[in-house]
Every structure is written in C-alpha cells, then in structure tokens.
Length: 151
Image (cartoon, rainbow, N blue to C red; front, side, top):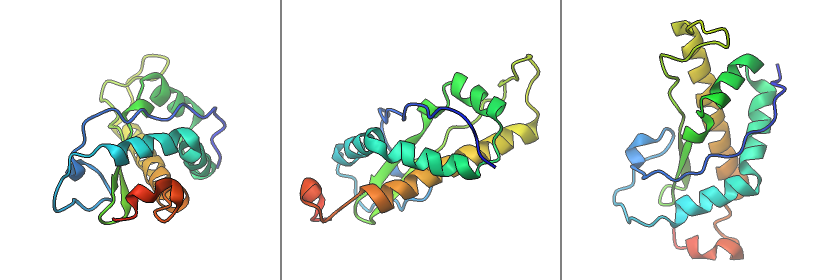
C-alpha cells in the first residue's frame, strides 16, 4: 500500500531534550548540554533525510489519506523529535501522541482503535526516519562532520 500525499515539511526540532524520552536510543551516562548534534539532525532533515524517510515510510504504510490529513492538519508532524546519542551512535525518535479529541472531517470522534492505528503508523514513520538518519546521513568519519569523530 502506498500513501499518495505531498511530503510535509520536516519537524523543526526546537524542543528541549531529555534522552530518556526517546524511543530506540540508549540514555547516555552523562549529558553534556551540547545542542550541536540536535542542530545537525535538524540540518540533515532539511537536506533530505526527512524526505527520504517519509518516502520509504509512505510506500509501506497502512495509513489512509484522510487519516494523514487529520494528522497533518492537527500539527502532529511538527511534534516529531529526534535525538542523536553520539556515544552509542544511534538516533532516537519521539513520535506524537494522537489526541483523544481528534475528530474526522465530519466531526465524528475517532474510535480508540483508529487512534491506536494512527499512533502505530506515526511511530513507524519516526523509526524509519531515525534509521535513515543513522544509515545514510550521519557520516562520523567524513571531513564535513569531523568534529564528531571523537565519539
């Protein structure tokens, strides 16, 4: 199944981070307070990681076009966040929670199962983009990202 929708803008990644809040990331033993990895992830998303991950996800998602429009219109895409734990060389993600008051375009409330299905698909999108960031965008040995080579 493929979702035929326009790719939304990537999330801004402008929220404070607590590594323990992210899926698929080991919490570091210490926190440096350095925002450089977060800023680098935002740059990677803008430079194509979001588009690549979204394309991969939409080729396999079971989310319907009308469900995606609800998600987009409610601003849930902007609630995605990603965390780069350089010590363990992984990228975690935080997918948005679907609000219980989300309604269909006709005003009917979504059933619990529908909300859960949407949340599962959003989680899958976060995991896919996280994998793309790890495997295709983070080049720890490249000159352009040489300041990360100590990790």
